[in-house]
Length: 157
Length: 190
Image 1 (spheres, each protein chain N blue to C red):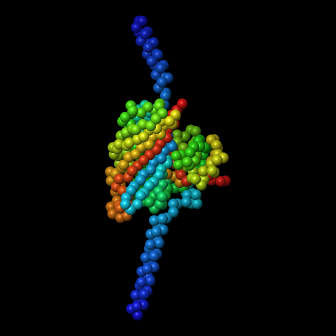
Image 2 (tube, chains in turn brown, yellow):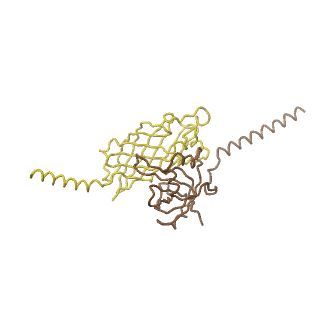
Image 3 (cartoon, rainbow over the protein chains, first blue to last red):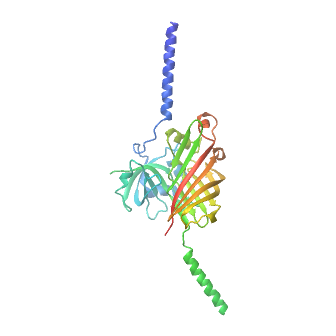
């Protein structure tokens, strides 16, 4: 009888350790959020998003930014004002309406860079990405900073 | 009368010359930047990269400004990235940008018109996690044709910016002082 309890106790203990260890291991090694597979939180025009930040930055930050960095996923559309590459060799499509003070900078990934190939300045583009920071005037830079989206891809119609 | 005419003529010439020389842009802007931070402890090395820094360099006055979107730092591990962004660490929702504004102190030693590599010292103020502190960075400035590359290095003590962890894993796995390096590429006009 005593032996039996001891045996089951041991089994429970060992499986507990294994399960607990596995949970910790998977939490520690949890993958990054797959932005392109996730659902879109907001769908809007580049111009409208910029306007929200320029009107009330605090309100817009509260709406779009997440405490743990898992900020809103946005589907943005607008006119391509420039196409460039950052120091990480990722393509950057910059959406901006000529009359706006700031625009939306969209950085692509190694997997999605090639989808920007057919775009040229002046084209309309719809892009999905995660927001990293909002737009606003910086008095030290003496310029308007743009909304920054990363992990972007083109939304195919 | 002659003297007056002379004065008017001279000031006229001066006005025209300055009108033509003033528009020369000395403040360069770039969105091509990279910031890395590195933390070393016996337990583990942690590194994060951000390629979304916006910066300006005024070649006439030596003023430099860096604006960093804090949520743009990418970590190898998703959990580390979440911790870093959270209220316990850098609270990036409340403080979405970090900023450094400084001045090259040995501007006379740098010739932005001649190709070469120059060592510079930049002193200024770092605003991080809502706290502003005076810091001094060492920098290497490389001029090559119409391209100017500025690379900087500075050690930041986290406790100075009220990024402190009481107990738990982070207190043993994150260094008290982290090394922050940056690289920005500017293109000269004309």
